[in-house]
Length: 193
Image 1 (cartoon, helix red, strand yellow):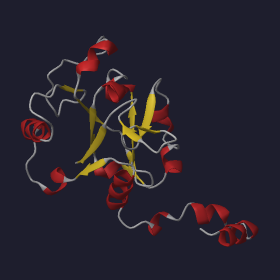
Image 2: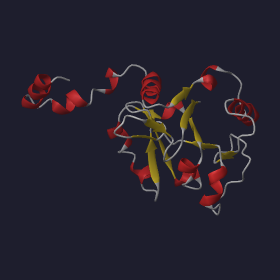
Image 3: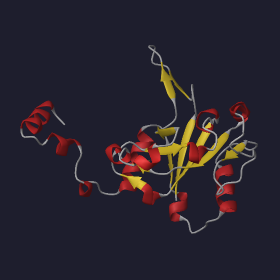
């Protein structure tokens, strides 16, 4: 939006409509989510949207094939088998050796490519930062259009720990060196289901 358009919309009291288009202005929320996630450095995986194969064994085998052999998996969802048992009493320090953490998101936001996680989804909050790679299972029927719609989901934000995550973590210094995974996950893969 140009400066002139912004000022014109503001003068005509159409500012909010210019920032947040009507829901019918968005084409396909799944495609918009995939584009936004990719722009933030995340990986959109639609294999299970187009595949009739379902089940825990199939999903577990598929995910294990995406990462190096011998990777330690820790799963907070029954859809994927983990190498480590995860429960509320699990010590955060024990997750430092986890290569791949698997969780299920409550919803995604197509505007930003972010997924919503809370203590209910993670079981141990540190799973979202201690695992080298984070895999998030997302029901594509639960993709919202905008962040302002996400923040209206009050019942989910009442948890003690909530997180909207979009892409892997990264740091850049003044010499333009970009380091992925410097203070968190090296990669974020969202599997559409």
